[in-house]
Image (cartoon, rainbow, N blue to C red; front, top):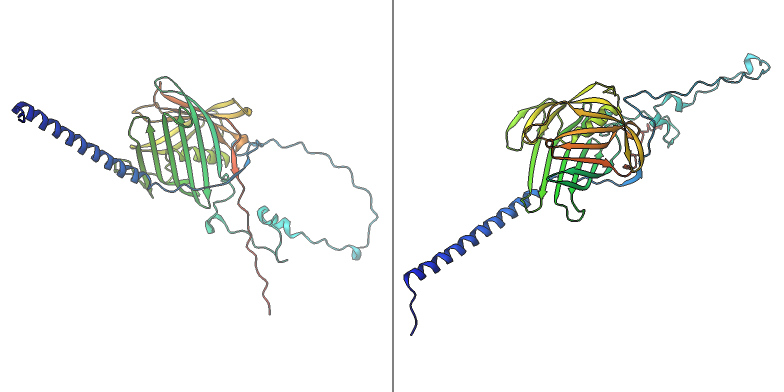
Length: 364
């Protein structure tokens, strides 16, 4: 004879079944949300590619400090030559190469006619030779985040004509299974004011926690922050990644001087709020010991104190390496920071070939 369950036991079984169904529903809902969230991550802009085929060698500094010129050498007096009659002296033709811009003069003549000067940056998609070629920099990482941390970081600056992307990838912990990864990516255009960001993405993954991503969208004169709020911005506004390349460009082209006490102002938009003007003070020259040997740098330090969980960065720029950052120290607060040190020579893509426009001869 079947034994009947008491009302209390029946209620317990029913409650247990209801709890299992509830947990199952929560799990399915979370999996669906996770799938939707990963689908959104896949919609990030595709990463531009470049072939890094050569090491950047240290060269004489340009931009912030004038290069010392070698002393002028005295020429030996010319040999005495008997004078010739005026009718025998033929004027020597002036070579065409000397009257053309250097980039055109070095190009081979294809038709025997005089090549026209290359189109200006305003008339073509090429922003000009003052921008470094696509570059990859690799760093070793040391820092403090609830204890000492070690890892690797990489910066890629990629440009194709007027388009650019810059990516800062940081990994804390073992290279194959890092505890924390963060990618800070910026893309946009190059112009007469320097970098003009169009979009900034910050993707963070901490082990055992959900992945997080924030996006900023830039339009002329305004930025849409991660929370959806829109705020006005100046034309020179930068994001957390593009500011490093903008600083390199400013010193490389001499638009900002490398002088102790000089302050460089960068309008900066951060993911959660537009922060306004961020000021970097040039504190002086420093020698940084790297695996490639000692490198002379200029040290830039932010004048604004750290607050509200925002990140601040100290930068060491190397004039002999196209003013690229040899060292970066990024702080979240006084106890939490990462220190990036260049661990190998920068790699660059081959320079874009210069193709002069050729004026064709008219035929009868």
